[in-house]
Length: 251
Image (cartoon, rainbow, N blue to C red):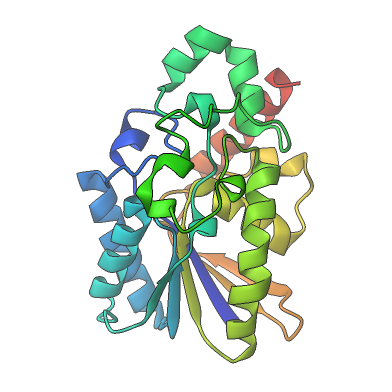
């Protein structure tokens, strides 16, 4: 039985401001740093260990991973960065807070972009500073491979080659992996692993710094999934109600 652990980064400064962050390289908030340390402590208490870690190019994920490994006394574990683990690119929404986006585009349209599986926000012009092709960090990639805007479907399509060509071979070699990434890149991976429908994925939210531990069989199919951070019954109820409301209003 193989083990895979996935973790969304701790709360960032823009999470706190309710901004569409996307590929903007925003730092962790003080709360996010605390969340990351607590995630490491939860994993250590469970007896988890890792042979190899993957993360995105974005600071909030790489810093979360560093804090987690420090808390587990695993700072020696190799880390590989992969741009395909980056957050979904929010196109013209990137940098706007929710209220600014609502005022500019309307509540219903913003919710459609947020929750519909295959509908991306308006794309950026390639001359826009928010387009990743204008960031030296991605200069080794073809501009054609870099997003101007993405739906969750697009994000998953970008992520799957990493999963199949990079992660799965290491799992088959017996490596215990930790992947620290972002809300939508991990929602895409969750959708793939758990075979979640295009409709039902709208109701799935991944909490910041909540370690999720998968056990996978020889076919790399999940046998079990465990969230290590306790979730109250009240929060579960609110999450279900919110998911149904968002699904209804975005139709």
